[in-house]
Amino acid sequence: MERVAAKMKAEAYCAYQERSQQEVRDKLYGWGLHQADVEAVIADLIADNFLNEERFALAYASGRFRMKGWGRYKIKQ
Image 1 (cartoon, rainbow, N blue to C red):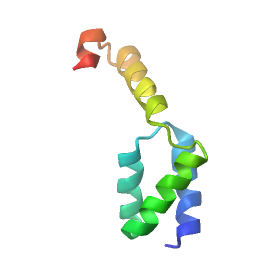
Image 2: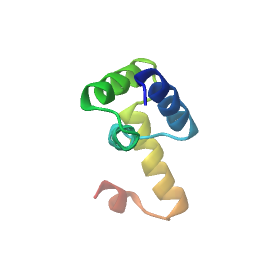
Image 3: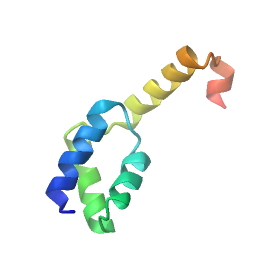
Image 4: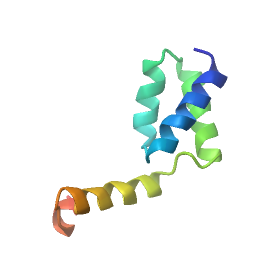
Protein backbone atom coordinates (compact mmCIF):
# COMPACT_ATOMS: atom_id res chain seq x y z
CA MET A 1 0.00 0.00 0.00
CA GLU A 2 1.24 3.48 -0.83
CA ARG A 3 1.98 5.96 1.97
CA VAL A 4 -0.68 8.47 0.84
CA ALA A 5 -3.40 5.80 0.69
CA ALA A 6 -2.31 4.43 4.06
CA LYS A 7 -2.48 7.90 5.59
CA MET A 8 -6.03 8.36 4.32
CA LYS A 9 -7.09 4.97 5.73
CA ALA A 10 -5.37 5.76 9.03
CA GLU A 11 -7.17 9.11 9.23
CA ALA A 12 -10.50 7.32 8.85
CA TYR A 13 -9.40 4.72 11.43
CA CYS A 14 -8.50 7.49 13.92
CA ALA A 15 -11.61 9.54 13.19
CA TYR A 16 -13.87 6.67 14.24
CA GLN A 17 -12.58 6.66 17.83
CA GLU A 18 -9.52 7.73 19.80
CA ARG A 19 -6.53 5.51 19.10
CA SER A 20 -3.10 5.19 20.67
CA GLN A 21 0.01 5.54 18.58
CA GLN A 22 0.73 1.85 19.09
CA GLU A 23 -2.71 0.78 17.82
CA VAL A 24 -2.22 2.84 14.66
CA ARG A 25 1.38 1.64 14.26
CA ASP A 26 0.22 -2.00 14.49
CA LYS A 27 -2.53 -1.35 11.93
CA LEU A 28 -0.07 0.29 9.50
CA TYR A 29 2.35 -2.62 9.78
CA GLY A 30 -0.60 -4.94 9.19
CA TRP A 31 -1.29 -3.09 5.96
CA GLY A 32 2.25 -3.90 4.81
CA LEU A 33 3.99 -0.56 5.28
CA HIS A 34 7.70 -0.37 6.07
CA GLN A 35 9.08 1.29 9.19
CA ALA A 36 10.03 4.59 7.52
CA ASP A 37 6.56 4.93 6.00
CA VAL A 38 4.86 3.99 9.28
CA GLU A 39 6.79 6.62 11.23
CA ALA A 40 6.09 9.27 8.57
CA VAL A 41 2.35 8.53 8.65
CA ILE A 42 2.33 8.60 12.47
CA ALA A 43 4.10 11.99 12.43
CA ASP A 44 1.57 13.33 9.90
CA LEU A 45 -1.36 12.08 12.00
CA ILE A 46 0.04 13.78 15.09
CA ALA A 47 0.63 17.02 13.17
CA ASP A 48 -2.93 16.91 11.79
CA ASN A 49 -4.29 16.20 15.30
CA PHE A 50 -5.72 12.79 14.42
CA LEU A 51 -3.50 11.22 17.09
CA ASN A 52 -3.21 12.64 20.58
CA GLU A 53 -2.03 10.46 23.46
CA GLU A 54 -3.58 12.69 26.14
CA ARG A 55 -6.97 12.61 24.42
CA PHE A 56 -6.67 8.83 24.04
CA ALA A 57 -5.85 8.39 27.75
CA LEU A 58 -8.85 10.48 28.79
CA ALA A 59 -11.18 8.58 26.47
CA TYR A 60 -9.79 5.24 27.68
CA ALA A 61 -10.21 6.11 31.36
CA SER A 62 -13.69 7.55 30.80
CA GLY A 63 -14.77 4.45 28.92
CA ARG A 64 -13.52 2.14 31.64
CA PHE A 65 -15.27 4.22 34.30
CA ARG A 66 -18.63 4.43 32.49
CA MET A 67 -18.83 1.11 30.68
CA LYS A 68 -16.94 -1.29 32.91
CA GLY A 69 -17.71 0.33 36.24
CA TRP A 70 -14.05 0.70 37.17
CA GLY A 71 -13.25 3.13 39.98
CA ARG A 72 -10.41 5.62 40.30
CA TYR A 73 -8.05 3.16 41.97
CA LYS A 74 -8.54 0.45 39.35
CA ILE A 75 -7.96 2.94 36.52
CA LYS A 76 -4.76 4.26 38.15
CA GLN A 77 -3.33 0.74 38.20
